[in-house]
View 1 (tube, protein in one colour):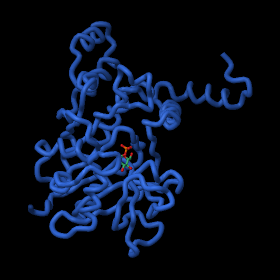
View 2 (view 1 turned 30 degrees about the vertical axis):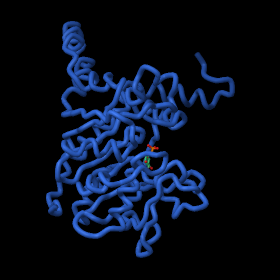
View 3 (view 1 turned 90 degrees about the horizontal axis):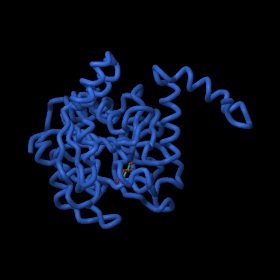
View 4 (view 1 turned 90 degrees about the vertical axis):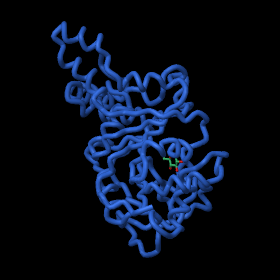
Length: 306
Ligand code: G1P
């Protein structure tokens, strides 16, 4: 396999087959990716982020009961026509917006884990570096994390993971990275020498957690193909990345980009509420009124004035 040299990452893989149990009962009949952050489903923010970074060929790895996601990225001609007939071009445009993205779907079939989900996109991606975005992690659009990761991948080759410092007692929620001793403390670009999925905090190699953005060399597919089930009996992307971090030859090597910007874990109820408040208070139509209400709300011990 040749080392891809073209800097542009054109393809993005977004796994969306997860059950969303943390949001039950809301996610009993609605995919968690469709929960709105203000007025836009979380998944549309993720697709917009990939496209902004240049990965405008998106493949979602989906599963049962996720048809609403495909519908959201399709045209809804009746709705658009009805809005246009009423002269509401603003809303008609919002409805049409998501259908302009190039979104493909492959089915995961059996939920065998994140590594297996990425492997399901192999024939769509082919032999080029690609991005993976996890739908639970929203990165503020003012922080250009994915673009930075793509630039690092173009320069260093191999694969790139996004890392974030987390409180040491929370590393067991994430993949955790061991970074090279050559890496200066406080550096933003670090060499990853080891990775472990959801370690016991007492045994974690660092407090650098893998967050849901990756730029992967296509050699990851070969590794995933031979990766045995790991933590939770699932094929873990972390385990295949460990093999690349410690292996040699074309496509080996893993670099970490340490992110210090704004991230919301919209798969977590508290962080989801924070994302809604943050983006609601900055919303072009609602922001001023919502912020004024919010100030009143926090300054009043008895809650908001009606
Ligand atoms: C997945 C990955 C984990 C990573 C996390 C980021 O875990 O397996 O390595 O740190 O996403 O959100 P999950 O949250 O799917 O359990």
